[in-house]
Length: 210
Ligand SMILES: N[C@@H](CCC(=O)N[C@@H](CS)C(=O)NCC(=O)O)C(=O)O
Image (cartoon, rainbow, N blue to C red; front, side):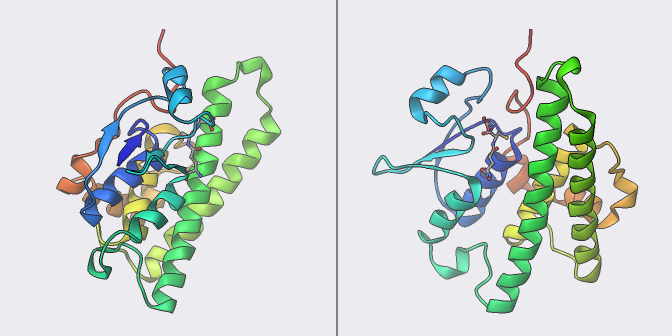
C-alpha cells in the first residue's frame, strides 16, 4: 500500500506512525496538496492528504477511515484501538478532542497563511482560536485525570502528533506550560524511534515557498 502526503500534515503523520506501530509495511510518497497539486490530483482528484492507495487499487482518504481499515488487516495484539467498550469509548473521546483541535489549527493556518491579510475575517479567526483552545483544554483535563503512555495506542499517537503540529504552526494562546500533560506526552513521544522515523518536515500545509 502507498501513503500519499507530506509528513508536516498531522493527519498524514498520524497515519504513517500508526501503520508503522501496527507493523503494516507501506511506501510513502511525499506529495503536497499545495505545491504538487497536479500530481496529487492525478492520484486523488479530491486532493486530500492523507490518501492511501490499497493493493487492489482502492483509494482511501481521511486519516481516521484509513486507520479503521488498517486495524482490520492485523491481528488484535497489534491493533492501536482498544477492544473493551469503556476503553474504546475513552479513546474515541480523546481522539475527538485531539482531531477537532487539529482541524481548528489547520483552519487557523489556512486563514492566516493562505488567505491574503485584507481577506481575513477576524471574528472567524477568533471563533476558530476559541474552539482550538477549548478542545485542547478539555484534552489536557482528560490526560490530567488519566495520563497516556507515549507511543502506546491510537489516542497517545494522535494526541502527541497533533500537539507537536499545533505548537509549531498555530501556538497562539496555547503556551506549552499551560498544557503540561500534552507537552510532556509530545516531548517523550518525539524521542521514540517510531516518531523519529517520520519527522514532521516538509511543505505540506504550509504555503508553497517562493
Ligand atoms: N479529516 C481529515 C483531514 C485531512 C486534511 O484536511 N488534510 C489537509 C492537509 S493537512 C488537506 O488535505 N488539505 C487540502 C484541502 O483540504 O484542500 C483527515 O483526518 O484526514
